Image (cartoon, rainbow, N blue to C red):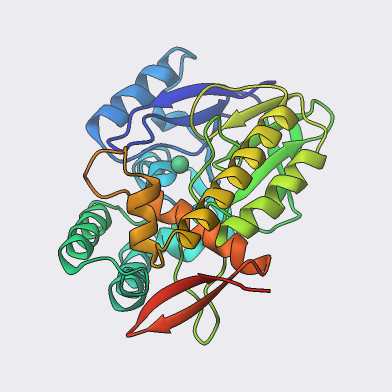
Length: 322
Ligand SMILES: [Zn+2]
């Protein structure tokens, strides 16, 4: 059977998020929106169209531990007694989201926003925004959790789906692929609009992982898959995934070249570059823009086009002379 899309509203810029329902042989949801009265009502309405209620859900499978994908998990599991399934990589974020979102906020406060050259007032605004999101997250009790691993198969809708690790937007992200029917539950890996390569806290004594170069590798792996229909985490299901991938890759290369040109023109910090690159965006801080821009810089660094030097704690990017 095909996954049934239930679109749930969020308060984020991304708009709505998709929850996918399998009704047979047992009701299973893949992802479940933010925790809000509007999202809950939309989920109930979507389930009711199939003659179901949240109490009927036997399993909730989470693609990645972001609030717009697991927000209602604990509430559904409370009512139904169903289990919440997530890849072992991301489980701790569900059990103790405040801790892990908090650690990321600490990393942003103490290192990343300083390195990016973000002025204090704006950094404060960003951190307040993150703190607010973290306050609203309900943890999933550990006894509700069931973990699976990369390479495992999940039974959904009477078929076997492969668990694929697709980092880039989130390091713990998994996608699910059904080879016979060529269906792909892509989470936030393949979206109609390129997902943001979120800057994550590095592991202790490890360098920061370059999210956009990692995303590009995942894109190439998606491109190789034989897919009929993609069921994305946001937006409508679509086909022709290779065409979309090529378009997104071209755009990333174009933006990367623009970033290089801006550095040549004398913009040397991430903050200065974001302001040039996204000058036409509304004045509220451009988080998504900052994450994308760090991604272009990471690509340029990986390709040896630029150097970075830390001056008074702030990254300065220079074009390499040859
Ligand atoms: Zn999402």
